Image (cartoon, rainbow, N blue to C red; front, side):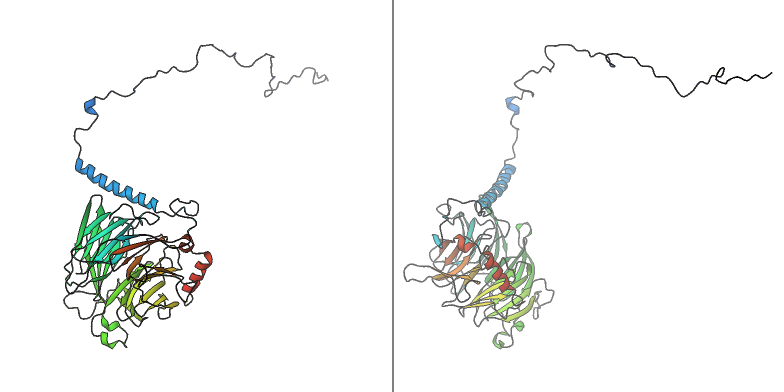
Amino acid sequence: MFVDRPAEIDAEYFTCWKTEITSESIEIQTDPCKAKENESQTSCKSDAEQQTDQVGADERQPKEVNMDKLAAFLRTASAIIEDELDSILNSRAFDSSLRYNDLDDEETEITLVNTIEVADGFRISDLSWNSSGSQIYVGLEGKHNSWCDHLPVLNSYRLNRSGELVGDKEYAKFNLPSCVTQVAGHRSDSQLLATSTATGEILLFKQERGENEISIGQVENYCAVVALLWLTRLKLIAVHANGILRLWDTKKNELALERTFKICAEHMPRKLKSIRSGEVGITHAAFLQDDPETVLLATEAGVLVVADISSELLADGCEEDTMFDPVIRTHQIHSAPISCIAVSPIQGNVVATAAEDKTLQILSIVQPDFPLVSYNLDSAIKSCDWSPTNDCLLVGASVGVVFVFDVTQNTNGPIHRIKVGPGNMKIQLNVLRFPPSDGSRLVAGDIYGRVYVWRFPANITEAATKNKTAFEALAFQRL
């Protein structure tokens, strides 16, 4: 019934997961490549003289051209182009790498470039540069016995980078109702100019190509303006000799009175009892560039007044007009009337003051009662200005001479004296100014209607690193 036999004899097992691989040896595993020979495998192009529609001669020009709009555009564009060209012409950005043929590299002395005869019978009352440093505005003032009946003009002259006059005459003239007391070129707009007169008017000029736009700010009292300051792009403050300050808004190039301030005599030091009951005579003013709302006022009593034009305090005794009292503090720094104030454009807390007591003081606005440097001179300085490139350099205009001071090299006297006038003749200089951001040129005006232009060498224009460090140490030594 059962028979024993080996299992592999009759049993067969077939796998369901393993398959046999078949292979075949051939020369290529892809289809044969097909190639076709042609004469050219690139696209054919054809040249044509014109690929646009032909326009008739009568259709090339517009039928109507608005000449008024075209002229307005050309006036605006030409002013912008001239401004940029002037900026390039007077730029000193590449002085360290480039040398120009109009300047002598070996020059080491201060050179008088030219003398401009502006007007006979008038004195130069004020000078100002435009923002690009290519033009100077010259204000004229005659002698007054009582009321001003002169009809002077305000002249503009163009100067190149070396200080030489461009053209043989003035570049532009502005007619004014009375003698000019102050001139102030705008700090950023080279075409905008503000002036003030001996009868108290404020005038705003917009110098365009071929025409001059004017806006006049009338005032009720006719006291002369002794300082005219562009605090910001739109804010202009006029300081009158009787202690009245007027803040003007120049939006849309039109003068609009914003606020009026009064310097009250009660703020004067107690020892000046004779003037505490009258008006405060203002002689000059300046402002702090780091804080334009802080204005420094020079007085006939030798007192420095620090004022805040954002003050909301009403002045006493002003029933008819609303006036504000801006006085923060006062400092008796001179024994005679202060003739000028100059704030350093580099070190904003350093101030130079000159007075008729023949002294020039370098002060820190934080502690003005203790001068950093004091100079005793042979003659009084009428006007002073700081170099915009050498923070140690200060110049002052006097009788027959321009003093050049370096407040770090010599604290006893000037390092240079520039003589003005032929022979032994001494000519009184009224005002002098450096252009903005350029310490290589200096202009000054005298009492005979002449303007002098000097060129400063590089060894005076640029301050050494050690001098800058010494000046910073001097500026902060009392803080």
